[in-house]
Image 1 (spheres, helix red, strand yellow):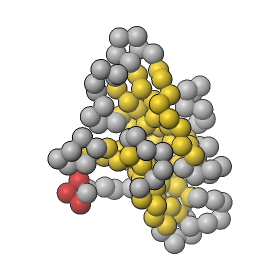
Image 2: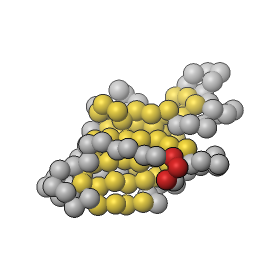
Image 3: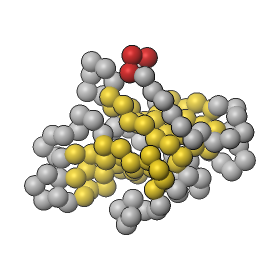
Image 4: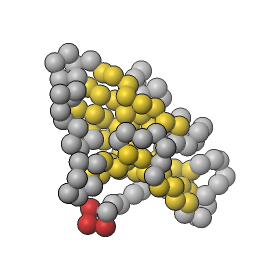
Length: 124
């Protein structure tokens, strides 16, 4: 809880695939403050390192999150669903493991926030 910075919603903690190397495993966390955080857990020392923090949806919670490895590559995409501001449409943002700016920003034009995401690898 102290590392994530806020309450974490159901389905908003995922292990990042393909990140098990010398630096250790990486974990992506979406919290109720609208932040996407990536943590590195070192294998030998078991120390937790905050790799980066992104304000995906300022002041509104991250409702759902999916982490997916792009087929035939070592790239990873982190998809986050929520609501950009209270009373607006639902939004989906996608981030890579290394970049802090989204490579995909999709507005659903529905009055409800995005609460579930399904991704299919063969469509990537």
